[in-house]
Image 1 (cartoon, rainbow, N blue to C red):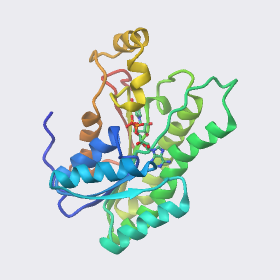
Image 2: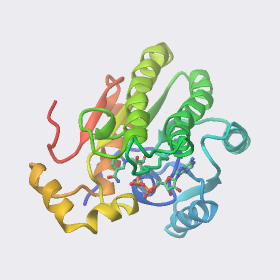
Image 3: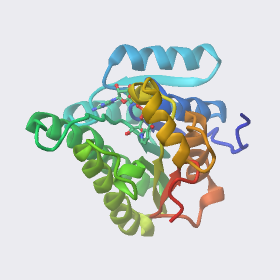
Image 4: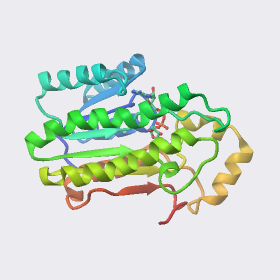
Length: 255
Ligand SMILES: NC(=O)c1ccc[n+]([C@@H]2O[C@H](COP(=O)([O-])OP(=O)(O)OC[C@H]3O[C@@H](n4cnc5c(N)ncnc54)[C@H](O)[C@@H]3O)[C@@H](O)[C@H]2O)c1
């Protein structure tokens, strides 16, 4: 798949949860277009491996291990960015978890863990990034939500859906508040994308057949197809676009 040509050669980009899956595709595509990319992941070996892979391909990348829901660890990441670059141009809040449980049996611990990773983490990183972007007078923040939080209940994913709906609301509030500083904030609501997170679904032929039948384009999405929108939203080509949650779901939700 070809990548649209934007120039991010002066940009410093932080992608959370980028050790694999959608986050890694986003980090790699920003790096390909010249950005210095900070690769965050709560699993530090994943962050290191992903950053090493980008460096091996000749791109500029740093591993930024840490839990985005832990204020001290987020602080550490931004101190590192300050010391080495003194700026941040793009933040992609991508880190997320998706526990599967009936509401009847949902543990409070899993509920809290999901809200922490998917929503509080985005808040903490956004707060730090926007303070720095305000100094620059520009910046782009992209929140990876889900169709589950915008238009499509998935089933047995109440904490996930609540966290992603929260992220869509947070996106609009942040877009409204940060607009005077030249900071644009958008969300992406992917459908089912081929990553480790959806392996259990892809291993279930019955569920897969049901999903495929409901997707007008007739297939699941690839991480690069989410990354492509992310690049556009971060670029000057989207300079008049803020506060919107965009579906990337093969036409499943057309509203
Ligand atoms: N795959 C899909 O079909 C799909 C659909 C809609 C939305 N999404 C969203 O896209 C994002 C990426 O999903 P994916 O499919 O690539 O998942 P994935 O599980 O392959 O990757 C997510 C990464 O986030 C990391 N992570 C989790 N909690 C973290 C935390 N607290 N701090 C830092 N890193 C953390 C994980 O270690 C993992 O490497 C998630 O927010 C997910 O909810 C995915």
